[in-house]
Amino acid sequence: MSRKLGFGAAINEAIQIAMQTDPSVILMGEDVAGGGKREGDEIDEMGGVLGTTRGLVKAFPDRVLDTPISEMGLMGTGVGAAATGLRPIVELMFMDFLGTSLDPLLNQAAKLRYMLGGKARIPLTVRTVSGAGMQAAAQHSQSLYWITAGIPGLKTVIPSNPADAKGLLLAAIRDDNPVVFCEPKLILRSSGEVPEGDYEVPIGKAQRLREGSDVSLIGFGGTVPICQKAANKLAKDDGIECDVIDLRSLQPLDEEAILSSLEKTGRLVVVDESTPRSSVASDVAALCVDQGFDFLEAPVKRVTAPHGPVPFSRTLEQAYIPSAERVIAAVHEQA
Image 1 (tube, rainbow, N blue to C red):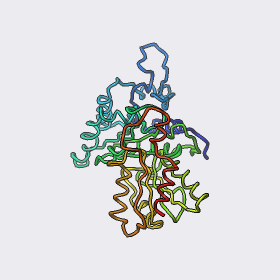
Image 2 (cartoon, helix red, strand yellow):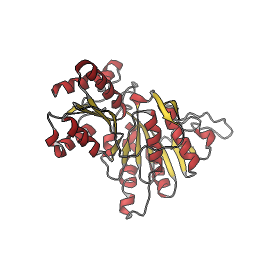
Image 3 (cartoon, rainbow, N blue to C red):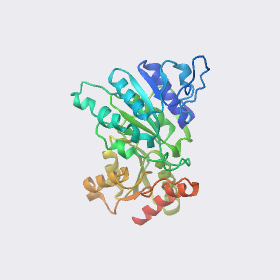
Image 4 (cartoon, helix red, strand yellow):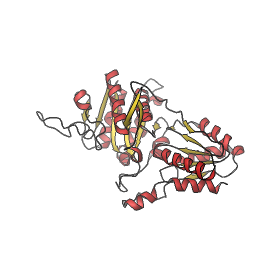
């Protein structure tokens, strides 16, 4: 059975299920509970900056923990908690704050299991909001998943719909390795059919959303609806049938799904909300040239943001974000 849920409600439900089924799961972050309430005050249930976790502190008062405004301290505490038997969910308010909390992830969470010969488990989940789309300007709108995806020892996932958000988050929380879970602003207000109960979406497995034989469209997170819109218009207006792949996981990356789609179509467009240099789009393009060169009938095309900060202006921000029109133009360039 399924019913319609918003993206944030699906995430909230996943955390509820994880906390109900495993007493070692805790939630930590800035303002996830009462936002610094004093003893005797009624809990105001802020639920984080976007209210995603509202209600959880009343259900699990001892396991939903407000932290100081110190991302380094928050992340370091999460790594320590994971190393000593808990399964912490750490909410990093915006992915832009990765810079102030990177060392515990880069040099501790990602390395401890390797350095201790596999004897340590670091079941840490880092939830963070990424990308543009809410006029949050240059310091609160970056898509920095290419950084975490490039760190050996870290996993990075990014759902494109509420059902995957719930299933991927449950899989991340139950993974014995650190997982960065990105929540794209472009789809935070979306809703969709979400199965009831407990289920997981496997980390590292892409999903084919549309069958086609003319060109492959590769997207993830907020760019998946863009790919789907472009595919619909290309089919209607030009008779071009697109094979649409949702990566879902950036590390590990489902290389087999990418290459099998390329083998079928011979043409590929990868759509990435981040800037082009050292991006996931560049990584996928390199993979296709390295291992799928014989399949290619045209150059791989990347549709990304420009190499610049995210603008505050709504008009400029919309021009900054990849669009279905740009994807269609890239497809036509391969004809």
